[in-house]
Length: 172
Image 1 (cartoon, rainbow, N blue to C red):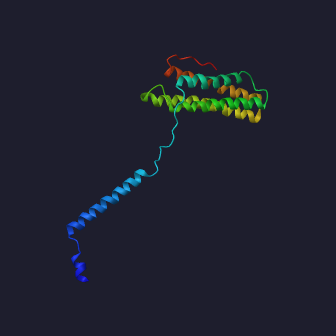
Image 2: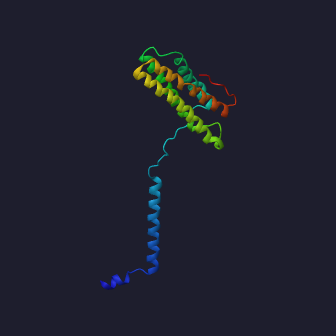
Image 3: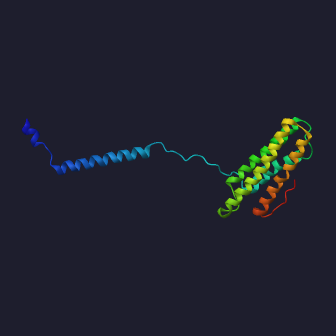
């Protein structure tokens, strides 16, 4: 029996060839298993649906106009204060949409972001003042609110002058 085992031993070259073939087969199986595994899509990213002109015409300008109209006189009651707050907060949130778009190209992206941040902060300041007025509903609160509003139109005008082909002056 021992002589049969001794005689059936393969030469070293053949053992190496089988080992190489086996190693190649294992690598191929692992590679195909990785390729056939579940494909992971990149996470969703924000993307503009509207171009800048449409964003301004369809969303930002109407939100600004609503806020401007609400600022025409002191709010009569808490419901009117709440409406002022909602309009200012809506405008501030809409201005967040400016951050992932630009008409300026990469060279002026930092300037675009700074101006968008200024416009957003101005609207957020109006929202904060309106929220204060909503809590106390004093006539003096409207004067504080009214003092914050021109910064909104100033932010819009500054951005339009820097980036728009036709730069309208936005009035408070």
